Image (tube, rainbow, N blue to C red; front, side, top):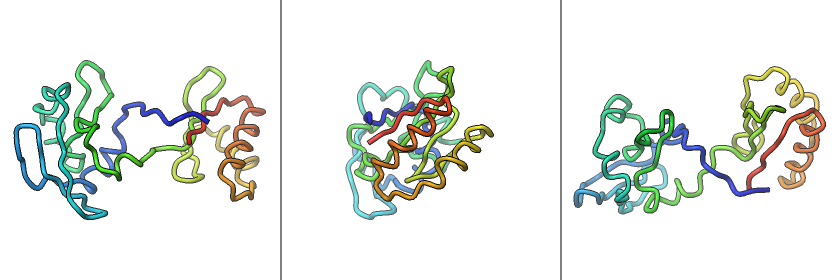
Length: 165
């Protein structure tokens, strides 16, 4: 298994960010006192120097008030987003992984993800069928064994799998 690598899609911070982090007070031009809404407590967020210009542009966040207040489009990269406080983000953000496995077709195109513990997210009918017939019946509780078995099943069906720790 490899370490999870973020693709900078921003979906996690678009969906849950505003429900997780609330800015209570601006301390300096780049420091903020924030509240962790779900787990409670406060933390100090610091906008990283390299993201200051992006952070100053609030146009996307103004249109999407549910987004994390520190999420911004990555300048010059259409469809890519960055956490402007990445180095000072709270533990709930540090421990979040949007998927535990990515599934690719034979050409290397991502066509599915395993979200949560064992839920397939795909719009590909053939992958969905393969999953229902080969993976869904698996009964092991050991996640390492399960991921290995899933990779073998999908591999035999022509898919490539990246499993994350």
